[in-house]
Image (tube, rainbow, N blue to C red; front, side):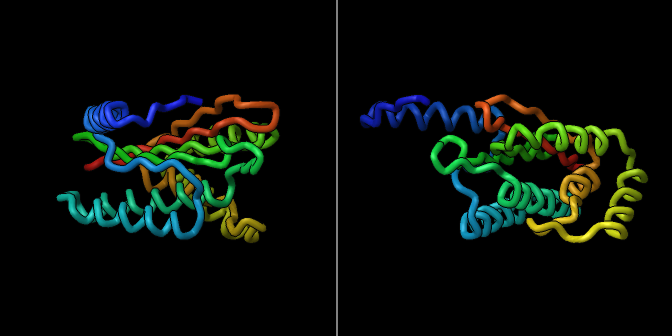
Length: 190
């Protein structure tokens, strides 16, 4: 963990550095913290307002917003939380864009025992073309019941379908209980 000197000049330097990084990487929104219902609603409101203020095509704004909803729901429903460890309680959500696409990135803790299953699911999703994703979605809806966390396993498939790109992901070992799961989703502006 980084210790930050909160003296006036150090804070100004920190914010100036953060501001420049956000400008360089064209980051529109960054949030790190607990993902509860009120935080999720606030993030969705901010995101919707930012998207409405752009000159993006309506279908692009809609895709980005719907993917953001799915990503935030995945964090709130599936993130591993170790209440004795402050670092695993906090997840990160970033939205950025450039001339070609929007990028939505999430990072949250996941139990190590769940990594292989999630990794296989992501690899299968990435192996499917547009029709394969549609067929998989239909198949899951017709054969699956809602799980205890509220989904039928459709979130990642919906994200892949709406984005039109392969899902980028990684797992970074944290400790014997959990790792960090990083997901990056691109949405083309065309």
